[in-house]
Amino acid sequence: MRLHQFEASKGVEARWAPVLDDWFRQMYVIDDATMEQQWRGIDRIVHAEDGPVTLDYKCDTRARDTKRLFMETVSNSETGRPGWLLTSEAEWLVYFVVPDDVWMFRFACLRQQLAAWRQTWPEKPARNDRYSTLGLCVPMFVAQHEAEYIAHLSRGDGAVLVPRDHR
Image 1 (spheres, helix red, strand yellow):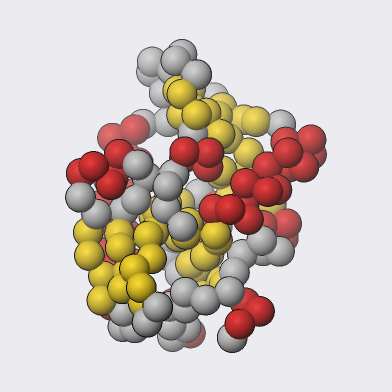
Image 2 (tube, helix red, strand yellow):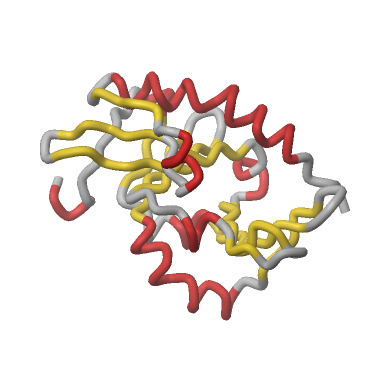
């Protein structure tokens, strides 16, 4: 089993989060979260027409090959700390399948699917040198039904922060 390197993951986000920032700035004013907000799973605040919207960014370099989105359920197997799928206080999950596809989910909708997904897909470990992170590897063809919006940057799709039903 290949070890997961936390520092490498931070590097992926550092590399790709500015791409998401630029994408959102085409339509919205966007601010970085404070350190306190980051501890609560909020990476950015977007100022939409009807008020601020909180975002949690996840940048994934493997999903394009695996055709699955990793939804973290346990952050640290040693301590049992719940993963970002359960703990993030952001309204939206912005899941970037690097380098082109942005999947937009409302956390509330993902959490409603959690019990059913756990019955279908076992939690898989992403092991590092000290502990494992656990998550559900949800096939893209399933996750797309929960996505509010899937954008393709190469086609020039813009950022949209409204539910699919209201467009």
